[in-house]
Amino acid sequence: MRSGQSTGRNKQASSTARHQLGPYWLWYRADRDDWAICWLDGRTTRRRSIGIGGGTPDLPPEEAQHELAKHYLQSQAAPTVTVSDTVRLPSEVLLADVTRLWLKAHVSQLAAGDRYADSVLILQKFFDERRAKGLLTGPLCIRAVTRDLVSDFVEWRSDQGMSPATISRDLAALRGPLNWAVKEQIIAYAPRIPEVRGKNRRRELEYCPEQVAAILDAAWATPERRHVHLYAMIHLSTHGRSEAILELNSDQIRDGRIYFNAPGREQTRKRRSIVPIAPTLAPWLADRDGKLIRYRVPTSGKTRREGGPEWFERETSDIGRAFEACLVSAHLAKPHLNLAQNAIDGDGSLILLPVRKKLGETEPRPKLVGIGTPNTLRHTIHTWHQRHGVPQAQIDAAAGHTSERGSGANYTHLRPEYLREFIDSTEAFWRAVGEHTDAHLRYQCDTRRRSPREDGSAQLA
Image 1: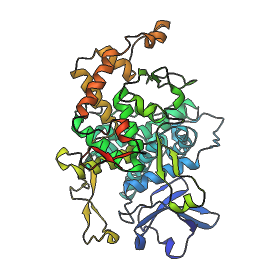
Image 2: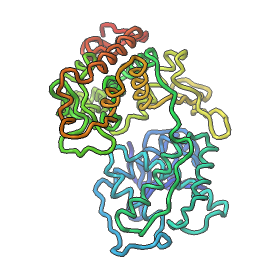
Image 3: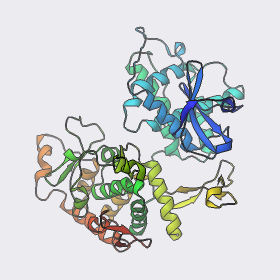
Image 4: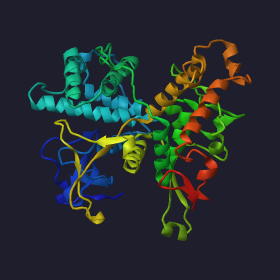
């Protein structure tokens, strides 16, 4: 990461749309194929490289936009929000002002709030394009967020090849600030943002045991992706919610069970369950301390020689990009498993990545994108349990869909037979994965003794 004062050449920003969120914007340095986050410090422009290349000055890659969103949210970690004492009408309040307050006061406190900031950037681009066409004039007030405007946005995103679920997530960044503003008595009422048709259409994608084995191998093969390996092991062994796994702490593991709802946290509509620890998962949790899912890589030799730490670690609140990197690596190792595909743009053309001269490349290469998301693991194990005859009540209890009520529900997890068929089915799943790898076995993957071979098995390091 580089930070410093800009030069004259550094001020060559895009001549068209500038990708900006709050006081920060993206700037592309073509001579280094590098994107940077920029902001004003008084009258001086500051910049911080994010180590991402590709795209064009007018079209930053999604990874760069994601980093801009994350940087903005981190800058709002200790927000000071001032609102009017008078409740106003939607025609008197700008959408941009309410969205900015919502990002500061609410989204910045969420574990994975950057996904909302990503969608805010997408909405902003849509509004900018409409202004360029003369379809929007002046600042956009809340009253102007009509059903027709939302329909146009849905059509715009659909033309880009986005799924109903993705478009619905983007609309959450429009619906969220409006509902929040009503709750905070900033506006008297808010226009209704309709749901996207097809949003709740059942997802058919699931991974077979061989694909899971390839993902685990790819995650274990690289130190900076081993948090994905542990995440997948917990996800497939517990059927837990992704947010609960990412926030899981060692003090939530006791008496042979995982208590996904942390002490002092109020249960919400998306319930967090209590699940017995499956035998295959148990060794992976035995010596953990603190937050479980942490990005961890060895430090440089120079750092260690100077008495610095052996490892660099940071907590992880979003697993999506690292998970996709594992999908791409697994696809390159075993293309027949179809875990990734070539990325295409809105016109159906291949997206090509810049030539990496240091690696001896002479031509651009197609960009690969993973097929599936971390939530595909949840669908995978859910479908596995259903096919193997696990009682639906046990599947629902592990997934946090239980309908049990009353004081008796607080002690169900103490019964000896609690989720017995669920755990038996989980172990059957790991035996199926074991036909293709042993990357799910802790004693085979101990970083002090072994590392996985390219073929998926283990060897002495």
